[in-house]
Length: 250
Image (cartoon, rainbow, N blue to C red; front, top):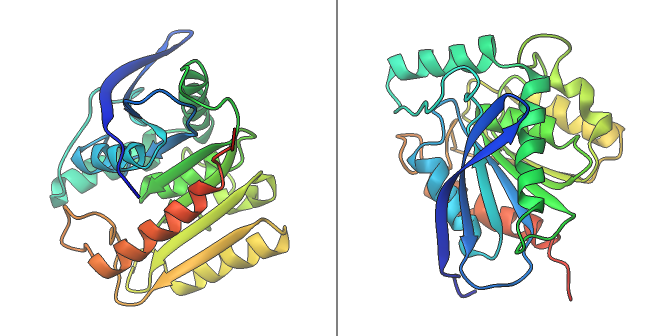
């Protein structure tokens, strides 16, 4: 598949008194492309997330990565030190709210709908780590028809801002979801992956669950020590297969 030349920019999404920064990547060539929302880890819309957004655009999608911490820490972007992880976790689990995250994702989708290059229906979503958890939430939005949730910790035990665990929303998922995990990921025990799969089966949600031997948390990120090239390559193939379902023939 020939990679598309792309354009990237940072945009501001506005709603009421809320302003959310987002990184946008789109093919240069005119056309009608599916829209994909990319959801960050706890480290902000950093180099890794921007690179993923660009990779998706090169495949023939318009991809946008909204800053999920914009309400609490505008412009936040950090690296992978122990100190940075503590700050990111605090923002993710103590200061975000599921309802606000869903609102910001919908805001990103609504923005994509205004762009002439974007199909007006059938959006995708991909998220990693904290964003993998949030992607499971986003899968319940009616506009989202294909979701890739990478190593989303806590899906079975909690939700951002508190309340019933995100797993309890499984019945509301409106499209297909792929959930991808590393078998060496101590933050997501195998029994939690089994719970997620059982719940998806219970509500007959179109899904696939991938478990990668030898892969740890963050296996897709080539900026981290836990990067696993073999698992990452297979996962990328699965993501491409998933999102290809969104392409509408004209």
